[in-house]
Length: 159
Image (cartoon, rainbow, N blue to C red):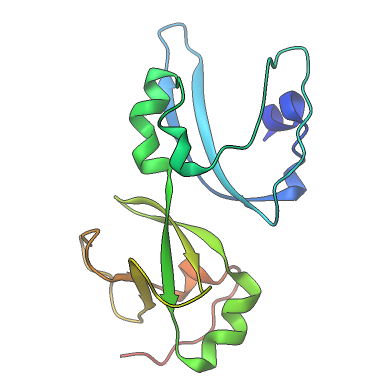
């Protein structure tokens, strides 16, 4: 976040960090870490003396850009795929307070949970049971409440 502030003017309080990935470890000792974060809206950026250009790009357009080779290899697990969160009516008021949001899913990278419109594409549900060891991308995604609701998750009486 220090680099984001110094180089493009994004203040730490403007985003909520959801995860990070080391995408480059150079022989000289420097490390390139990509931070995945949510913001309420598109944030303005400013350039400093180290930055040639900065702009917001839709996720579906990133892979077509001339990316650093290590970042290009990491991109498939950094991209947040949209997933519709199916909730019982009792959880809708809570969901409206925290969605949309990005959630890290072990082994699958990141998903972007939303409740806008009708469910299309992949869906997710909350469960109180242990999560399966491996969830395939074509399966309905199972999540625990603590992955979706920040702070103290609600008590779920789910099967």
